[in-house]
Length: 426
Image 1 (tube, helix red, strand yellow):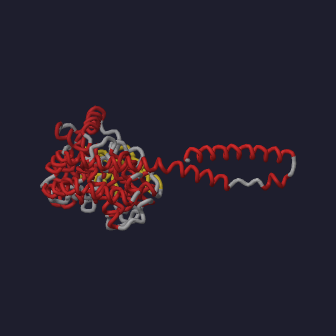
Image 2 (cartoon, rainbow, N blue to C red):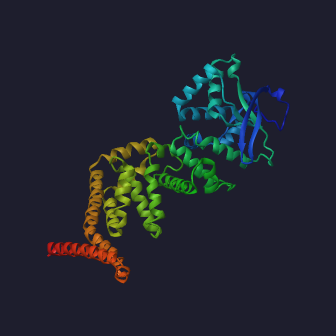
Image 3 (spheres, helix red, strand yellow):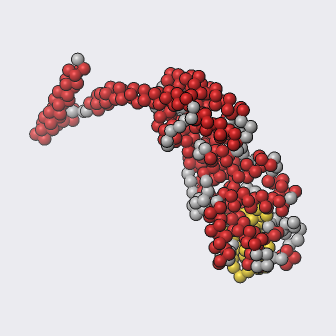
């Protein structure tokens, strides 16, 4: 398979590329620039391996096949294209089928963007549909070409950083968020900021590109770090498909907020114990609305009491914690792990563990209710301490005297109510 490479041969005719009358406007940081659109044979193009639309699918493929997509792109571009096509198709078959039917009926309406080395950086889904239609209708020229702007990467005006900025806007901008699952989108952002060797991007620069605040990007990265820790904890590092199937992202987000605020002064051991308890509950706690339950119960109530938290961790370990670790250690693959965890979730041990958890939550609720009268009295006293009648006393006029009388009447009510409460206590 011969891949387009304009550095080797810039004669477009030799590549079978045809100029069209269309133009595509691309907004770089320096402003809008219009590019001619060309009809490029689909057979000389390759996918973008860093496409965030297929992040977790790509990681799963690399883990199962023990091969890097970037390496495969160089060694066997034909197989690489076939594998990536299948990954992109699997991310949203319904939407991809719809796009395929639209292209079959009306043609490719929106041009993509292709680099001078043949990499498609905008329009991977349209490219996928055209590849499939071309195989189904090999003699139909409508599906033999991909309409796209051709971008020369010169390292000066158009650098790899500028291209990555464009990719981010295309992949995660306001118009493209529909159709992305949270793991693909957010882990792509996390990977770019925290794991990239270039360090070209930070919270602020990415926030500008994807229409979020730097604080939101920071929370995304910290939550994704917990996703990675969870996968390490269950001995399945990098298997993001599990994270998506177990829907662990949103439950982990409140844990980030907790460690940034109330839990920021905990020791590393205390943080680790709380994380592991949280991870275990994600695996075996059989409750509805797990995100709200763990946020409002475990984080906002139990974690506020250090002694109760220690006791719950001890009870959890004695009841089911060790069994969870046994399941994790013995499971050879993902399917076995999920199956074993589901069985464990329905055992008496899991029910007892859930009882311990719910009793701790209810105990904290009751304790908080017992503290309410004291807190209300303290708040009332604080309000009274802020009352300053000296300006009215010093005024010595009819209006001031009237206001003082009204204040005295209200204070009489306060005294009466205070005496009623005292009598009730006695």
